[in-house]
Length: 245
Image (cartoon, rainbow, N blue to C red; front, top):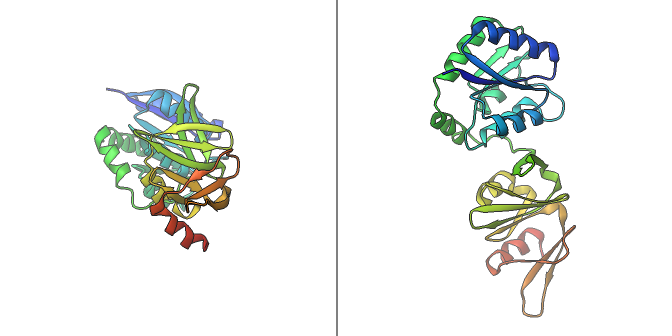
């Protein structure tokens, strides 16, 4: 079967160069191209590529961040970095890339990297993504909705709320459903968020005040939210210790 390949580079000549090399190599299906990480992630969700050829230095979301977001997909593609700079190699492999090619890219090197990527099955790629050793935290959360994919900046998130299978992320522009568990979000973004309940994680940035009623029940007020959020009795002590109240 042909490998379905997505090309990502902010320079049009670089995209054309990769397209030309892929056509010479053959046995691939070029399903699209993107000029930045945000476009790449949205296309990956829509088109499900087997391999993403990903530049590192791009405006907005760079290649390293895009690779981490790609790894979080249910069926992650294999990522091969294509860059003119060798100082990103360690970060690239921390992001679980299967290849790292320096520009100008040679056809035989690209063919070898594609061959390696083609030997990896989807379950193998999922295991590679799952065994990433403490990668730097993401700067965005990816949420799928009817319009496609929305990338929500972490600094715009008010709180996360878990309800059965999904987690709701409330942010400055509304709310969306995501598949991340509250535990994984707390592990990744812990210093910037505080757990107030077994199903709620609140951004410290938007935490306005902590209140206590006559019955001793604690609540928090979050900027941008109309009503208060209840603090569980189990989490109240930790909240008091953290904020010294």
